[in-house]
Length: 521
Image (cartoon, rainbow, N blue to C red; front, side):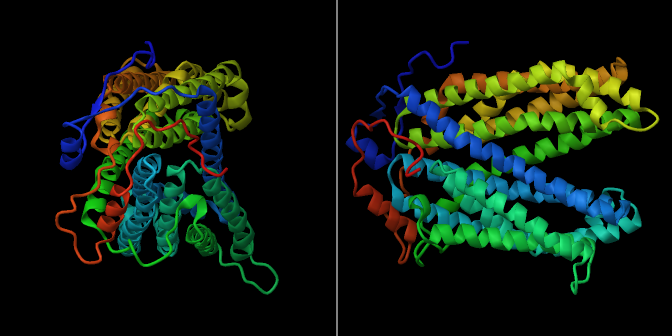
């Protein structure tokens, strides 16, 4: 495959008014790109995003580690609660992704007024969603945990943990949304630093609340939930303070732009809802996937958990480079420079392939030592043997997974979030789950067969995303144009229309210059 080497003659649709002025369409000039600058920008955006995802995972592991001293029931309660939290967090992440895409397009177009309005509107939507989710969790924590089939004592402890945690959902949503706005302008370092800070705060606060210290009595699992909330409050306060002061040119100060706007919320929903659907399809498929693994026995299930922990570490580069592709493609299309968008996506893809291929070599060569580090019990050798075959199968899929990851992020950056949802649904539900049962159960290939099905899923996902990318439709996405809403019927105090009018008063340059996507860093 010749990655984007060919030149596409593209015509991007504009609004009716603009189309009339430009003869119906505006040709996009294939501008020369600075490959060195693009490589610098990709790495500058990717590495903090990689660290942020790693830190978020570390926080969950630290919580489990501290709670493990309270007993197995409390550990199970936290584990079950975290599974449910991931479902709700996916909704906040989807809104954050939508914010990133819209802000990136506005930033690339130089429409800073719209960036501020986008940040405010997304924050409003996120806070409303967080209140709704918090109410649902508080009211239905007990039955939701019961649906997982947990024991009574686990359900009681987990429901209490969930209800306390739900009080912090508003602050979690605020962190996600404001972090998404910063990522849209290429600043992934600030969210990473805030995440690192709240991890430290969480541990410092959790220890005395869980176990007690001096005059402070320990309150066990409730203390762990309270510590999470305290760290989220501080993290949200820091993010809000930074954007009130205009971090990276984004300001949420002032009363203008906070009233919910139908045009913007529809635009946000068009991007965010498919991302939410993608997460639900993946999460639902993972549940069935785990059921198939458990059909192979407890020892194989334990082997799968150990292997998955190792494989999950290799996915962090994928998350980081995918985020870099999302931000840079969005900014480049906002600047009406599809050549730069292609170059950014391909640079991020190549870098991710190198990183994940190296991890694949590591998994293949050191599969047995990796499994021996964690395998214990009477069936230790069974666990090791199953895990070694699984790791060596998935090692070959690492570069394949890298391509699928990054191109999905690039498509999201162009506003095409529906296709990644479709490709995820097809690869997961039509290929991974049926093939896992066929290979592992029917053909008797065990855990190696399960991971062969996982590799097949990655291959299908990669092929579909390559096909979509090479079609070039992402360059003519309606989100590739930053056309404002029609100004024919502005309402009094209609902030988005005011911002749109401001942006229309500035004519875009005929030939945008090459720029760094990370401003001021």
